[in-house]
Length: 170
Image (tube, rainbow, N blue to C red; front, side):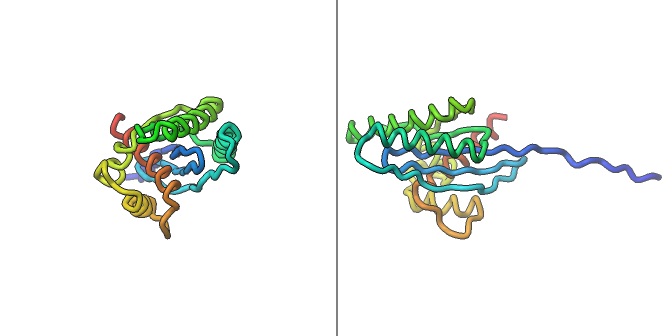
């Protein structure tokens, strides 16, 4: 009987950009997804300079736009604004979040939003996880050799949460 060769199932990879917004430090994390495999691409922090908020917002927009142009992600996931004790801080956070979303929309990326509690629950297993727990689980899930910076780890966690949430919907 002749051998029949069955081609392997072709699975296309996709790239997810996660953003942890902040007016001074915005974390970013990119992960690649192929089938059920998730792997690390890049992460870091966008650190704004100066005290002028509009100029810092412009820096965030430009940096997110450059990340999108360089890595060509397929999807964009960002943390929702949480209610902060300080209204001024919440307003600045919302504006930073808005310019990051504007950069994604300008690049025709679909935007997905997740609450901080939802991200922590998806990555750590509890919605009350602290930053160190998120860093540790991101390191373990993505097989990183060291702990990512806190804001970068949060951004990677947002991307992982998106991938896991999207997988549950399909």
